[in-house]
Amino acid sequence: MSDFKTKLDKANAKLEGLIRTHRDLDNEIKKEFDNFTNERIVKELKHKKLRIKEEIADLETVIRITQ
Image (cartoon, rainbow, N blue to C red; front, side, top):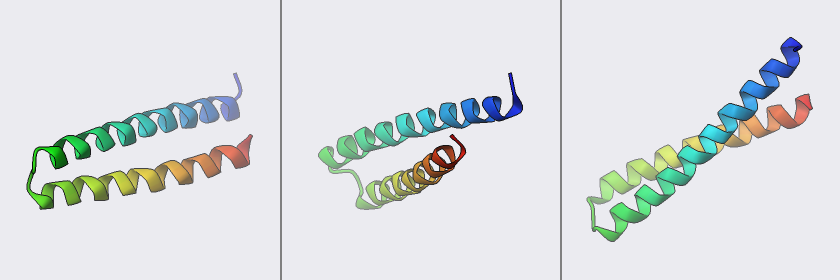
């Protein structure tokens, strides 16, 4: 297998993991919000979710360019 193919496979695997993490954070935010958790905790989770969303977008761009 070429080095290029291996790197692309790794990038796709990382993307899948990030998407799962993003979805899990969304569920956690909803749960915390429904439980009237401290607003600071929800805000931190939302910031983490946003950083992951940005990382997903960057990785999707790299994958799209390299295909």
